[in-house]
Every structure is written in C-alpha cells, then in structure tokens.
Length: 268
Image (cartoon, rainbow, N blue to C red; front, side):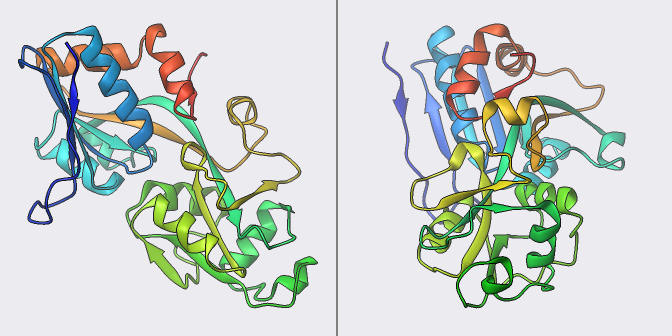
C-alpha cells in the first residue's frame, strides 16, 4: 500500500511538523528534534513504513535542544540531536550515535576563497578577521551567518573551532536551509551547514586542505564534523513500534539509506 506524506502543519502548532503515516498504526513512533537530521530521519521513516506495513511515523523538526527536552519530558518516543549529549543530559538520557555529519563552511559563489584553516575560521567568527582581503579575497566586510542558540549545528561548529560563546554573528537563523539561502544572497557572507543539506546555491570551502565528503568525515581527516544522535530516556523501555524503528535505524539494512541522505553511517 502506498504511504502518504503530509506537509507542514499550520502555524498554530507549537512547531512545524510533518508526518509519514500508513493505513493502520500497528507500529507508531514519534521523533522530535534536529532540523539538520530532516533528510536522514525522513528517509528512514519512509523505509520503516515500507518495511512494516501499517506503521505510523512522525518527525517534528524543532532543533536539537528542543528534541532533547521532548525526549526527557516524554513528549516523543525518540529525540534527535546533532550534537553529543552533555554530561548533565546523560544523567537522565541515553544518546546513540546514528551517523556522522560534516559541517561545511559555505561562502557565496562569487567569493574567491576556496580553503580556510580551522584557525582562520575561528578568527573570522570571533571578529579577529573582518575583511575578506585579509585572507586574499576581495575587499569587503565579512558577514557572519550562523544558527540560533541551542542548535546542534552551531554547537558542533563552535566546539570544533573553539569559538563557543565568542561568535560575532550578524544573523542567527533557525534552520540550515535559511543559512544557505542567506549566504547565497550576499557576496560577503559566510556560514556553515550540514553536509547532507548542501546546495549548489553556495560554495563549499575546504578546511585545512580537505574537502568535506563521506570518506573524509568517516576517516576523520575533515575536522569540522558532529554526530547525529538518537536520544531516549535512560532506563525506560521504548514502545514496540519505537523499538522497532530504533533497531531498524541502526541495522545494516538502514546504512545505504543513511548514506543516500548525505551523511555517514557508522561502521559502513
């Protein structure tokens, strides 16, 4: 039976959500969290319902922080985070790494800069470098675009570059797609985005001479990367449907689906 895919819900909802549903709900699983995981978790949800006819799967793209909170408070079966859990969060939650994702540094296609070191990226985002000419680019002010506080992408980026709570953002946006669009519209802008969300509207910059790819993320040579994590409540058993999805997402069967979504499954 062909499954239907519902579009975004109305603004009256607490957060945008979309659902994958089937004719019956023998298995039902709800997920909530990272917007960067949208493509990966959506592909897994569709495949899960194909595997288990009659299952229902929902994904609520609210951001990593909100997804972690939803899992902790029992408002979803599985939270989704694009950052590792903190020591405090691990007291009540379990985090299981599903895949690894490169965080790509992106500039406008008109920008001649093609490679940056991790230190140069840090200097840009902390305001030590404020003009592209200082890096060999055109004479123009650097416009720093990033994600909002609580974003897993932001947390991963700032952790790797050593810029946590130091970034001088011009704009803080709530979705990876918004970062890409904003950078594509400003020749002086720089931003960061999930490898799985990359678009030809922007130019990817290599880091320390290494381009972001599945291979370089998995072997660790591309340094700006973060985990995609499934978050569950510690010591509590998942529902039958949620456990089935959890097991499926971590299975060998799911690895090609994860890879197709643009991120790197573990033990590929």
